[in-house]
Image 1 (cartoon, rainbow, N blue to C red):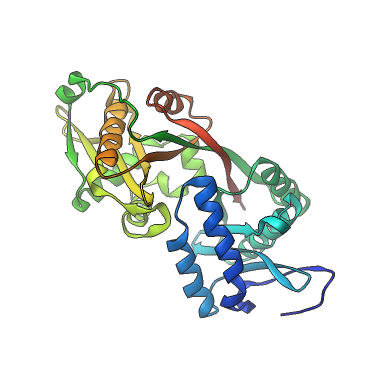
Image 2: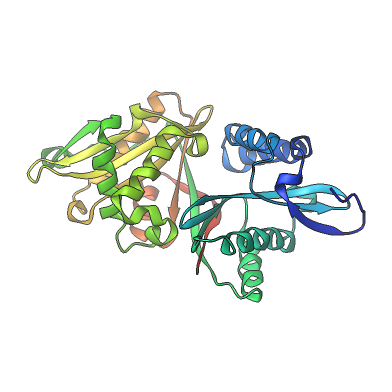
Length: 324
């Protein structure tokens, strides 16, 4: 690494020793817990493992010879995903975040067979998001922003009553991994034409949704999957799967609704509310003190339901999309 002082550099993350990332990861773990009620340690462990073998593709921001920030990307052709971007608080500025983001985007857009970039950066705020968008535009790339919200509620707060009519129409069964195929079809149907399918291209097909669900169930990015607070609903007359809710624990005592969706044909009957009620009650019984979820800000219907359940906004962040 160039140790010259008095200037900033963007360098290949694979040239950074794992020990040089330790101060950043320590700060990031603290910030995720303080700002988001989220345990970042499992993700930090993966970063360490890849960095130790110099196989983590990405970029690092170096200020005065010290690593001040990093970001990494993964390839899922034809998508490239910016999985994380973090700059230590004492060095953070919208300009630094924009420069680091641009370096990652340029690397992805210059990669053969990558025609789309997706990213959701929960610690990057609105001012930085605007700087990222403007900086990308200067480089000739259009980055679309989608406002997202992190909502939270006290797990012990009262819940609305169960609606008997919902159970009359729908059979709701506990989660089983054998339901992955049916759940994938629900996601593809529920998000068709919705902003969320613009944010996550995997929502557009059952096969893509299957990969998305496998990541929730098998990997720690969305916390530790909690099947006891996850359910799938079947229409008793039509016989098809029409709604689902998946839950995780993202920290000790912090539950998270990682997916809640209902296909259009089954909406308006209270199924989404009942799935949410079941998940929240089950997370509480399993030891959750607080429960969080994320939602796209333009989804006014979903936000109204969450507010009825006592969820309140605690943070605004953005999804970033670029397409060739």
